Image (cartoon, rainbow, N blue to C red; front, side, top):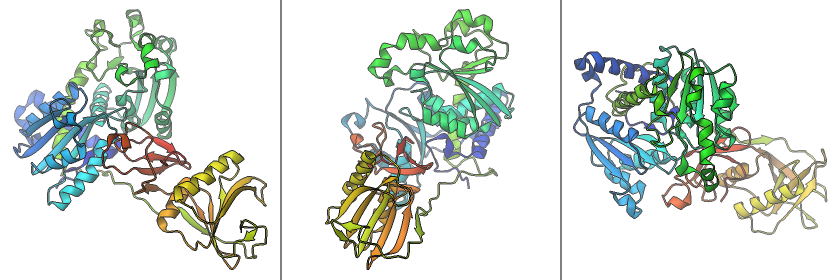
Length: 524
């Protein structure tokens, strides 16, 4: 039984490094068989007329859609294509309901999705998986063929396969220049994790600052140990000596740019377009890649390079067909029974964000924990809110806690100086409230990490808890991803409940679109 069957590939990391290498090795064998021994390629063919491959492309596409369509035909699967214009999506039909309906039409299904809504495949994996389980249907597999500005993992797999071919399958080191619109280009965002198949990684960012790699992706690269350098144009890049042998170009994503950037399109394009005058600076080992197709009027790799040895993009484009044959075969369960590496495991979360600490043994005096002029004899006090921040910031945090938790009761709150350190902190006194449920505690830890909960009985702090950021925040109506392109954003009217994972000490990332948020930003 293949461990790949029914899996979802929303992002590159949905396959472990071992699983990615297995994908590349199977693709290598398939490509060799198709070139030398057609009979040998039969072992890769699913050959199942009941395999339903659904191509749902809500954005225009040529290379991804057609390579997947031909890959599905290789497997002799039944192929169903849906676009925005020729389906009920044009009538604002729910993506969720549509895919649930289609999942019941085949014993085994693979959905390839391209949508402007980021994180769509992750959501469908959850909701359609539950639907299929309740109706005794095998859960379908989902492949992200590009979602907004987020990721394009299937393009990344063919890119990495092409890099490995160019380096004669030496995975010890890669030096790569990323050239073009690095802000909006999802194919370069996928390089953050795709390049981890190599031991040592050097990445040169060649783009004007206004369209360079987003900071949170660059930080992820640095966390992986990649060495990064930054240049604002090809001219600047070629003016230094340490030039990468492999270049990866992306076009300007004008359809995703705001008006201000589109007004500067000509100068931005000039900075990342390879000109004839650069040809003498090419070395014999340089190879250029591009996800294709190029813009016919303003290509960043002009046609005069097509016949030169630097052209690696044509072979790269053909590799899309091979890698996508293997991806379908894996998720359909036809390949993978012989996989022996480490598989990707879903994240696990512990509820270790509440730490009980030892309260001071003395009774609270008349100036501690009061409601108005009266000390709190029995109740809860939320203390150490936003310690060390400016008073206005602390007041904002106190008000957010009261508003979000619905603390509309007889109580008091304020901003005070700590007895021990003199630093400012916020405090909320809640007399008569004897306990918080787990939901409220989790919300409080996410709103005000570092605060303390003091349970007071007979004017004594009976128990004291320090709250850290919870590892996961979910099933709360009060949270919302602020990325308007995320599938969970209310503007899309899909029944998606926002969910966030803890990232670092002070940030959360959206489970669907992976947009980073501070703990202050996730609340609606």
